[in-house]
View: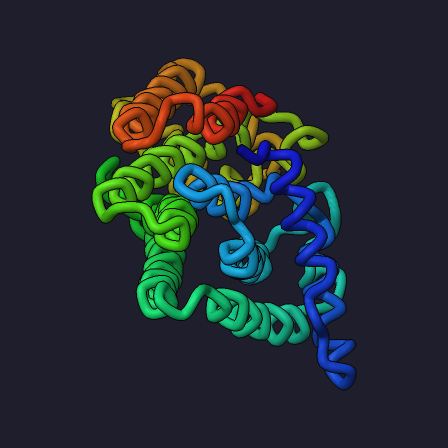
Length: 324
């Protein structure tokens, strides 16, 4: 079985060596930049690990795995523009470095590069892989649209929030695993179980990400903390606070959300104080752990020997303990 470090290095090597048309150097400079910032490479590693559960030969899954990672980074380029974020993984975002026009164009081309990589799946698995990828890409964009819509919506329920992050974040992790399982020639049942594993893992990951945006350290988190609060983003923390707050607390929350010229740092501290009084962080972390447990329940049912699951299980465990 291949370990996550090897698979991450393999993914990085292939990403570094992606062929760029000679006349497209300027177009691809921001692409190379965002891909060079690294990150966890969670999605390609998960894809390759899923393939490796059923097959010791993972070569056929490498390019599709890289395609998923290129698509993920394409969404980050555009998300950063929408969120007006200045930092990504501790470095300037593409639009803050090259401008919005270049970020849109270079981001767009990444979607086509991703499809080109996905298209290198083995012929007998190609139709299923492409269909899943395209379905997932539409779902991710739908999740981003809901995220935008919810910023302007006064009340978002917990169920609406969870559906939004399922589409925006969880389905791509789930699809990464299913693509690997398809190429590894897994049964339909095992493909479903790995998809469910990834979906639950993605939900937990995003809820934890919401917590880190408010309570994490910029140095460890890779972007400035508190940005979600400043942007009035409907994170789990805010959704839950609006649900639980009453009387004076609810009035304080609404005042902070409606204020136009409030000092950003003061707003972050005042909002955090309300979250703390309502014990919102504790509830968010509890829900994240519930989803992590659901993920492991699905993984345990995959019909391969327990020892073959050790690497992918350890990777998931490491996600739970990431920087707080």
